[in-house]
Length: 182
Image (cartoon, rainbow, N blue to C red):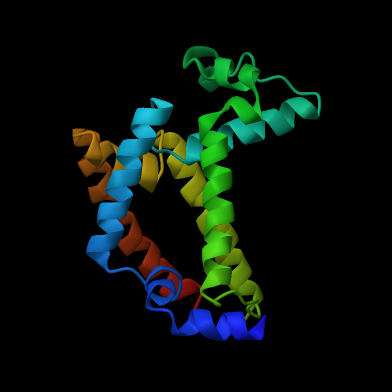
């Protein structure tokens, strides 16, 4: 096994694909090609946060709740997705693929590591930031993937508006982070 790893470490293609980061242009071209392929195969542009809403609804229903009368599920046709189930939802398969792919890429690049939590403030900042980002993604009916990347690539003006406010939010968030949590 050690000899195989040593051989791989010397292979220029392995290094280019798995070890070394892609250039921004290569990343942009690959993302664009994958976006086109996804739109052609799934019939919908790439999105992430809407699927997490479905996951939460499936868990809630498994615990005995009902989302039938909730606005999001009753008026936007999302109930059909819930009835189809996890394995028949292209968004769920995409999100699982993103999670597994990110883990695999990290492992292949030998970059996986557990980091020590520096302080309780760091945990609070991460939880607060994640909650606000998730809430904002639901208000905007999309995250930086669905509302920004897919919006701009489908020539939607809303993608550019989302991008502007994303920059404003990132600026304000970084100032708050530096002031209160670092």
